[in-house]
Image (cartoon, rainbow, N blue to C red):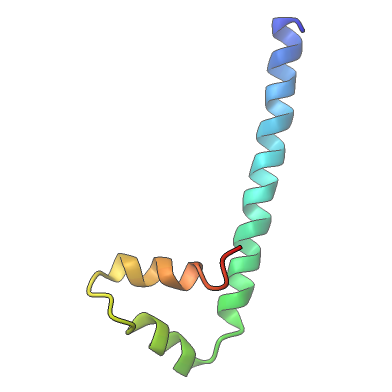
Length: 64
């Protein structure tokens, strides 16, 4: 494989990775949007003193 071919292959892999990340984030957002306000409050209040941890818990519902 030449350096030019390797660079092009890297671009393809990068594009695929970005598309995968967007699709995964879209799926997470859809799951959060389906929760009721009561469920969101319960998750946010579930023993996290750090607001950053609360946000990450919301994004990690039903992790794969």
